[in-house]
Length: 274
Image 1 (tube, rainbow, N blue to C red):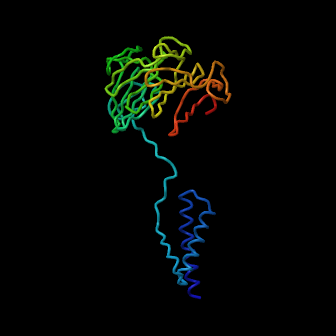
Image 2 (cartoon, one colour; image 1 turned 135 degrees about the vertical axis):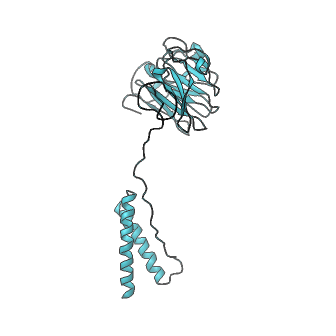
Image 3 (cartoon, rainbow, N blue to C red; image 1 turned 30 degrees about the vertical axis):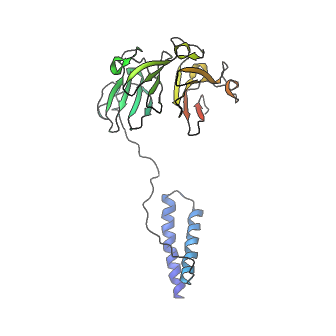
């Protein structure tokens, strides 16, 4: 009789632990009571000398946070172009962000006409840009980028930036800006480098082979740029729509953002759909 009283007390104690565990981990009561049953069977079997089982040891656990803590990494919240630590820095409509292998972040600061760099410690600086609405080749603050929109990075840590002039720009690790693809004006022309045309390239991503993919928003197309600068249309056509299909048989309506997974599949956001 004493043994059963002991085990009843033991099970009620374990039940209390399971209740708190199920609350902390947002588990169902079914899972909690299943675990309780396993504990009971194990404990009773061990009490009877079953050599195939060993006692389970239950230790208190710290609750897992039920949400992510959000903090400000960079930016005072005021519009501006100040550089410095997190509290001192200001931006003016930052559009996109990408990270390099060292944990530095690069931001397209749209209305400041800058590419900003943020160190892992949260210190910001101007990486590229004169601050004027101009796109000119050069290094660092001698180079100009007119209202930068999207940004991505390749395996060699070159940056690729789209601007309001429908250019795709390439920026080396040293901060040297060159024209990569797209000429002045709008259009759908495929071709090499500046012979190609875009119409509001709003999203960029890169694959492991350093091909760049462009969400060409107002052309409703997904474009591909090889490392040599050859532009082709990967998917989409002149018709805005939501047709599934292969390549140019598919249709999009204003594709804006694009991402790639570890298998090389592309994901595109458009109006009310992924």
